[in-house]
Amino acid sequence: MEGLVTEQTPITAGSPFDGRSLGDTQARARTGASIVAVVPDGQVIASPRPDFVFAAEDVVVAVGTGEGTAAVADILASG
Image (cartoon, rainbow, N blue to C red):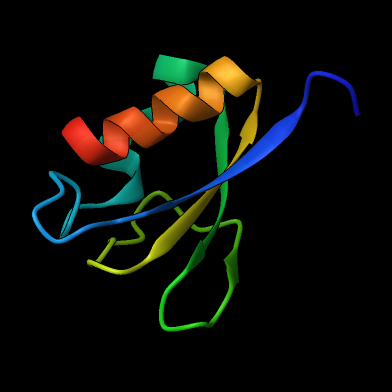
């Protein structure tokens, strides 16, 4: 679909969200993009709940506009 993109972003060691919940990101409210899956240890967790806790090396899958998904990646990296 035109205008809709997905972006995969790893949670790096030292990320402000390593050990924090998806809900703490407030990604949807802050960016308009949605986190639709998390891949910890190669296992896909689709539609993770807000209480899902990220760990280093998890891969986060976001869907939205290019600007929105890039903003999610920035939040996960910088807070």
